[in-house]
Length: 236
Image 1 (tube, rainbow, N blue to C red):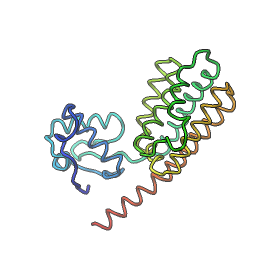
Image 2: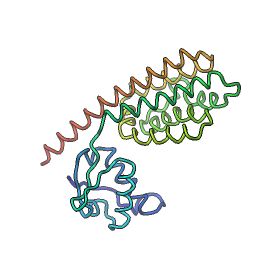
Image 3: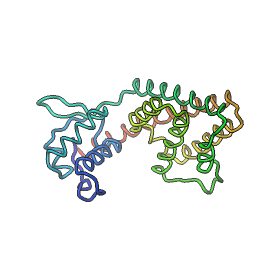
């Protein structure tokens, strides 16, 4: 593992130390500073993030439970390798949940969620957000709102878990301006179809939207991994 300078946990927002370290390490994973497959010891990482072993271990254990890390007794930790087969399965499950939600929305009498989403996505081009981290959060909120509209607590819980597990690659879809524009356009078309109660059209648009996003993030992820490994090799 290559050590890099990071922000000390004490400089992060006012949350528990373990939560700060958790967020910090997770960001290192998301930014491919800690690469998939990288192995490291607790002592190495404690020095890197400038924290004691107890909150570090709590953070690592939480990341392990969420599937971002693997632990090997007596030999340290490993960043979980990216498993695109699992990601594909999670995307398939996500589509099932979201298409069910869209079908119900097309039939529902009361649909306040549509006004909320329209205020964000049915706007003029010059009003659109461009910062990828903002659009990333807005996109998650859009798809989560569709599922929440069902009122099914278990579906909402499962969808939230899927969102968390695919975030490491999904967020990369918004690092390119063209993908940000496409997301606004595609969300707008989906919303208009739902508003007009055109269920077949809305379902077709949603499936195409998710499939295109999945293909883009796979390509971007592999490209970023290649570039990260090239940088490491050049600095070795």
